[in-house]
Image (spheres, one colour):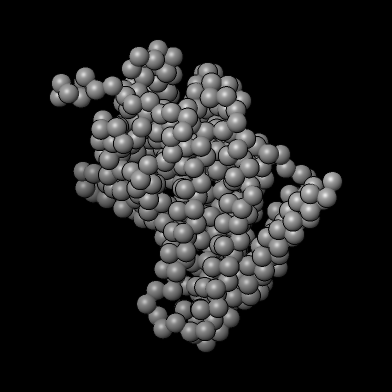
Length: 402
């Protein structure tokens, strides 16, 4: 024990990059997100979709806190690694009980209470590691105390909601998130924090997004179940894959490298770098990740409908919830991308056009067979990628000629 007390935090340097342990941590988070997809797929009513979104907000904020921590002290430093391992175990437990997150049990530890306690463990460990990382840094120690005030306050409605259940649980858990996240935003805005490594911070967010995109394919593929695979299902899988590749291209080709350059070029102690990290990455990446989750839910439902309706090769028209998940998730992703662009390299008003197109196609997709609705979305995203690629090539050609 004395060895732990004598150990000093290993501070991150500007050249620091994401460690394999941090990627391992991200994988556990994404496992929780895939469990959310299964939870929402079981019941597509608006309340369930909102409850899924609420849990998604929880997990994203918890992950963001550890991403900020890993930018202050190395995650592979023994005390930090040990704390994050316990947090990973708590996230894993929370993910396992997500399907019963709103179910009442007679046992001493019901699923809602298990989820609430697991989340408290995750956030409590983050606070503990913040205090450890603040050794010798009074400014960071004050920030940790401010975080602790709002975080622990949020635990009251969190536990009350888990005990009461029903509508009260949804309302109180919403209040808990608003207090926790809102308090964190206020503390961050009021502090003069430091993003020690811009490259590390950008890389962490890019890695978690690409893992979410990859896991979305696995979760969507689960919609086929164990049924005999027929050509409509295979075609739908190809459409889903093409749409996912388009989403990858729209972020990782051109946009992400340019944004990372803006972040790394700002001074580590400048207010500009902190605002970029807080707004463009912590905030704007939330709709990106949430969009992928709902997009994957939509593909999951399309594939499930095709396997459940062998007499209808192209599938029946999807209901409003399923169509909204597929097209609304895509629009949400594009909104996050636009916000990310505007906050970093700047975005043109023309970026609103593809968002509007996807939303306008939503009622059209509602009356189309499921396979055609997915194909229409894949074609729209592919057209957007082609347009942006040609536009980028044309701009480069004009610059080289001038």
